[in-house]
Image (cartoon, rainbow over all chains, first blue to last red; front, side):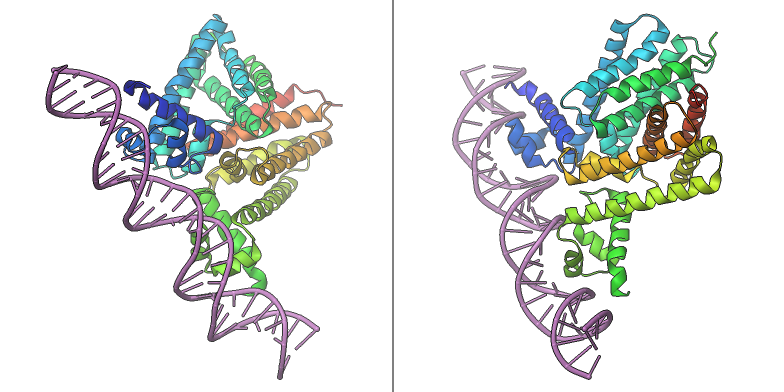
Amino acid sequence: MRRSEIKDHLLETALRLFNEHGYHATGIDLIIAESGVAKTTLYRHFETKEDLILAALERRDQADRREMREFVEKRATDPLERILSTFDFLELWFKDKEFRGCGFMAAAGEHKDIADPVFRAAEMHKRLALAYFEELAHAARFRDPRRVADEINLLQEGATAVAEIARSAEPARQAKRMATSLIATMERY
Amino acid sequence: MRRSEIKDHLLETALRLFNEHGYHATGIDLIIAESGVAKTTLYRHFETKEDLILAALERRDQADRREMREFVEKRATDPLERILSTFDFLELWFKDKEFRGCGFMAAAGEHKDIADPVFRAAEMHKRLALAYFEELAHAARFRDPRRVADEINLLQEGATAVAEIARSAEPARQAKRMATSLIATMERY
DNA sequence: TAGAAACGATACAGATCAGTATCGTTTTGA
DNA sequence: TCAAAACGATACTGATCTGTATCGTTTCTA
């Protein structure tokens, strides 16, 4: 492995293990064993485990939001359809055999203090996801794009939570139907 | 403390600490320090930490569902109002200064293997919560009580997830408005 | 009221945790 | 090409983890 790739490889390995076992349950020793990178090397890239978690969440945040944007833009051009297509993106995610719930919710659930940097990273990700929904709602000319975004957001969080427990993709389709019904009553200009 | 109360006291202490710090982050040493019970005594009541977690979740499950039932029955007599009043119960919960998200979602998030007894305890709790919604939907004479229950359930999970991050009670009111709108279109007999 | 059982206190075992120190080897970049 | 830096391997530290062993004291119960 080229040295320039090591940091990325560590983050990818860490994200995979965090998704599989959670944050506290994933030890540094496991991450180095699975990645094949020496412990000293890991600690040269990340000062502490918390720094590694924060960097992993940052990477996931960027990737998730970019992937959703790309999916939505490819899937539909009509602004209203674009909003609803975010649920199709969700469905694909739930169908992934590695799906074990939202990593940011899991991070917040293991770092519950609102002053904890890990909690704040999760909070920031959710804020940015909401902002994207608002952007889509604005493009669809809703009178109250904030309210539309809030509702889409709540439906997506609900679908993700239900899917995490049921390990099923059905909640994504259900949430899409609910969103369709709710959006139909919202005023546009 | 009377000996018959020790087990309850241990469970209450454990539940408080699990809610505050999560499951992995809460050590046995902290539980005995906070409860004032000797470690040998704790291990006489619970063979392992996992047994303690399972017993705590069982206790929480019973208490949560009983409290919701009592709240709903006191709050409304009309079956439709009873369904909507579950969101008022949610709002009260979110307003609690100790609210840090759903302990069952946190448990599942830290024990992601679907064969893990802790995951299965969380799964069972969610199944029973859904069954209660279906019971309420049936009493309200909906043609498809299962579908109503699924939608109420998804809205409650979404509200809880959003409230966990935002530490706000607003998602409960928002979800209630959404439920009201959605339910209005559902056929009854 | 007497014996059994539960209790508190404490020390301990053995594993695992995050993080560091050392050192020989490999890669990078000027 | 050569020196600096990064790397792998490994041993280590000190803290913390779950769980156990020991033992004197208290409480329950028959």
